[in-house]
Image (cartoon, rainbow, N blue to C red; front, side, top):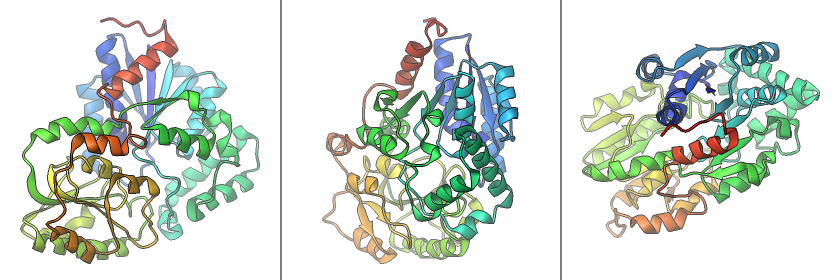
Amino acid sequence: MKFLFVDASSTMLEKNLLPIAKYIQSKNKNFEAYFVSLELSSYISPEIELKSRYKIIQESAFEFIVFKSLRISKIKSFLISTKPDLIFIDGFRLFDQLWVGIAKQINIPVYKLQHGFEVETVFYKPLAVFVNIKKTIRMLHALYGLSCIADCRFIILLYQYSSYLFNGKSLMSTALSSIIFHPNKTFVYSEYYKEFWKNKFGFSINDMILITPIDFMLIPEIKKSKKQNACCYIAQTLVEDGRMSADDYNSLLHELALISLHTEKLIIKLHPRGNIQYYDIFNKYPNIEFTREFPNCNVYITHYSSLAYTAAFFSKKNILLEIKSHKTPDIFKKIGALIVKDVEGIYDILNDSSISEEPCLEEVKNQINYYAYYSDINPYETIFRTINNYLSPILLIEN
């Protein structure tokens, strides 16, 4: 039995898809996995990328492949030669859809894992997007391939996708919502997301399966750690992904750095793809530290990071700082977070003793249930059972 796990980089493969492969491997010793990096992430730390590749190859004994081509013929030839029983993707970007469309042409099933708490659209800055010329050309190549598979004019699809990317126009009536690009099964975080994907791309409700958000698996272990009297800023890839200019983000970080003067400690929770160089301004402050792990703190600040949902289980001082041209998506208004327009609003919350810091676990579960399904069943077990039912008798459980 052989699966292909496909994502934009080693870092994303290791973070999001390797745990699934390792869980299946624990159930079936004959399981083979190929991890395919398309080398399409906007920014990746070279050090983290190497560590991720090591975890895939050395620690887990799976095969790692760099595959940069977005030509239909090359992808199809690759799939025919490797003959996977199933393909796993972690997002629904242009290149993901291209692989889905090609795989379905040759009858290879594709499963999709939800990538964080996704929103309808994120408004990108044209200049910030086009500054990465090589990636832009490759994405245009992927869009061209999608137009060929969907049998539609490339120029029309380019206009429709650009309208979505920069103006938030719907994709539902475009070729990108064609059923040929729909995964066979999609693992989603809630009933809300079943409706989300149905409305955005026309996914069938019957082809979506509920799982607990992957990040929620961290909660029990983090709860055991000592709570720090600290404020945690959960950073996002706003510049790396072309949603904010470097200058604007630098100004924002200068304001956030001053929070360290009003709290015992400021912890910067870096994104796996975060460029550490953007945070050099924090180095002159003695009570600021960096981490890539989720800390147990009494205050959290972010904008619209998926980890805001995890933070809701640790503090009622869960702050969403709105930034220019980035309104708080509705999905993040459902967790009882405190939304502020500027850094001064953060100071008010830090000094407000009427807001308790420790939330009730069951209350949070009930409050977010429609938007984030919380179950004691390991999400990887749900994924495995679904695969086993779909592919049986290929997947012979050995334990």
